[in-house]
Length: 346
Image 1 (cartoon, helix red, strand yellow):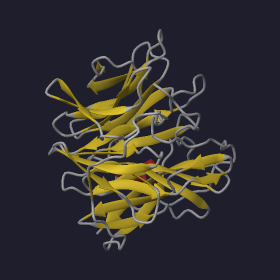
Image 2 (cartoon, helix red, strand yellow):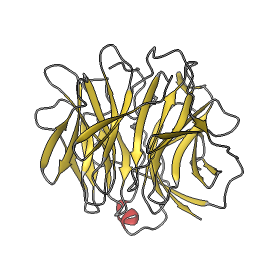
Image 3 (cartoon, rainbow, N blue to C red):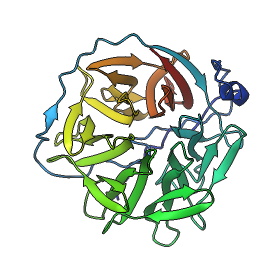
């Protein structure tokens, strides 16, 4: 599995979690003085497109408009209290969150430890014996999925966590596997690769792995799945541009924000509301970002949003629940990175 050197968004300002727990609007507090300048990743797990195939994707493309529906957003900041570096990657309907924190020893993945926040505080999630763990999604039953790093081979494996029981997940024949999303039925999506192939998506349902790939794409990422089994993610074309992907029973549709070369989808609600981002290659500090804005997409229209905390150069959402609550990260003009929570209200 190939990786890029850009880290996942990890350094956060403070948040009053008791306010978050009762659903009130969070207020931004001053950014910490000891915040470190950390680059952002191309994806939540720092995977990149490989050489891939030469042909362009031949599936259908949505006829999209950029005129937004009427949506208002309220924002807040998130902090993992026992670490200066932490990122929320997923949120369920109970406002339980999962993510990762610290990256002190290894740089291939975004975190040394996973975490869960379930209303009573943060709990560390570490796969037994693994040097690195990250938690990417949680469903309403509390099932958590993510990745851990093998302490012998250095390769990644997916995992699911039910209660206190871990189960290792490996796509058949893969060197590396990562679980990125899980729906209410326990169906899991993610990515896999070998030493000679780029990332490809998968869905695990009923104990059976099935591929999720876009014909002609360099690489395909399956990031989210709803209760109907509709999958969202993104792919990189032969020119290296990213495109949002909707996969409904194998029927694939490209979802691109108009007028920009790069888009992605990160999540989909049970009603079909989609979360993603878009942008153009932009250097912030010394790091190249291809996505700088978030969006919600429904009914052929987008609602674009940016974190409103002053000097914000890039906003990248990672997860969403069925109540329009979003978690993700943002970058300021100096390249500092922070986490956010948002509530979208029609």
